[in-house]
Amino acid sequence: MIGREEEIKYLRSLKSEEESQFIAIYGRRRIGKTYLIRESFGYEFTFQHTGVGNDEKKSAETQKQEQLDKFNESLSAAGYDHGRRLNSWAEAFNGLKEVIKKSKEKKKVIFIDELSWMDTKDSGLVTELEHFWNGWVTARKEKDVILLICASATYWIMEKIVNDKGGFHNRLTGQIHLKPFTLKECEEYLRTKKILLNRHQIIQCYMIMGGVPYYWSLLKKGKSLPQNIDELFFAEDAPLRKEYTNLYRALFKKPDQYIKIIEALSAENKGISRADICKKTGIASSGEFSKKLRELEDCGFIRRYIPDGYKERNAIFQLIDNYTLFYLRFLKKNTYDEHYWQVHNNSPKINAWSGVAFERVCLEHIPQIKAALGIAGVHAKVNAWQCEADKGKGLQGSQIDLLIVRDDQITNVCETKYSKADYHVNAEFDRDMKRKISDYLIDSRTKHAIHATLITNYGVVENEYTGELQSIITGEELFK
Image (cartoon, rainbow, N blue to C red; front, side, top):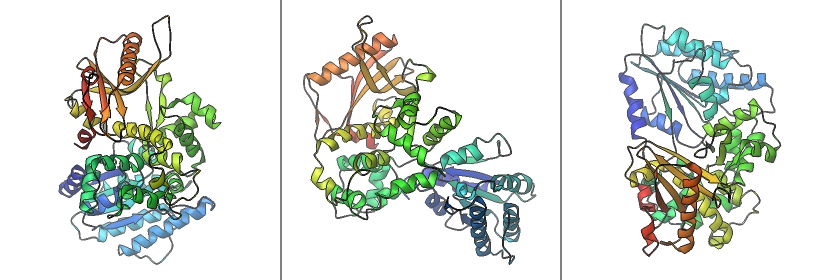
């Protein structure tokens, strides 16, 4: 298995714990949660079950019964068959208790996958799970249960389990938020599949697919990156062309408004305010709207940041999911063109997208950027900043997309530049950087030293302007 060393070590250590363990594993769809758990426990479980996707056209009662029927099948597979249909989650967990009591294994490993799908309206699932853990597992003299629950709907597991203030409060013994692969891990993964791409191509692939392992598993050796992208996205039956709809439907029971928010943000590279999202989508500002924004943030599709020097009410929301950005830019309104990426690879549209997408890659590799700056152990706030032109204050009007405000009294003003060769710093770049720094110094009134920083996917051509930069970070350093 590529990466995940710490997660595997932790999961395998659970069998040596003296107390029963209750672990929540969460992360976006296709990130590898199920694979991680199965590999860590050698595919050996006392009981395992996966919730099934629901058809929202069916009644809540029908959905509940279908979930119970599938759970009953899993109980039978684990050796408990009481010969009748389950009518409630109380009966279902009573059956699970019998499986545990009959097991001869030293540690009873219980794995329930896609738990959020099982939580249909008014089903009572969460209450019965709470009772199963608090009222039965922890009350047993034998401290021998390892309960692993998993869900792609990150917001659901955060709200219902991790941050619950009721019966689950402080009941979890551990949690794993499974993150996307880094560039380094993607490179290692390709090596195991004997797929040869150089680092520039790997960065471009990451700009399209992010670090989602399943997407990378679909790449085929012997084909160029443009050929692979056409097959995965632009061919008539391309598997990742259909992923967009499935992705949001799998996470949200009523995805329409979430998709409206995502699509509003996709048109604004730098992000927009909450009020602007409401205007663009027609969704009323409310507590329910706040919850949707929080859920999208928990799932890793958007980020919320407060521009340096501004208040909470000035928070900006930005789409950061690479796959979603790519889909909406190139696929939503694109008719089938199985050679699109090969033919248009140097088009203005793709060049414009490349700059935005590379910036997202940098945002996902902040630890690598800090390490390249030699400040891996220094606390820093990472955000953005902007100001309007104001002649009275001497402001020309600027925007800084990546600002690293460090506790060692230095602030890195970062400019990200995607290039198809070593980047050539020119007079225009130098002038823009000096304008941004000047505006930032005036507007923020910071006492920090300001370090002009360039981040680019290739190297840099040395000339009279590069000496003005305090730091240059190349694509090579993003792979560390």
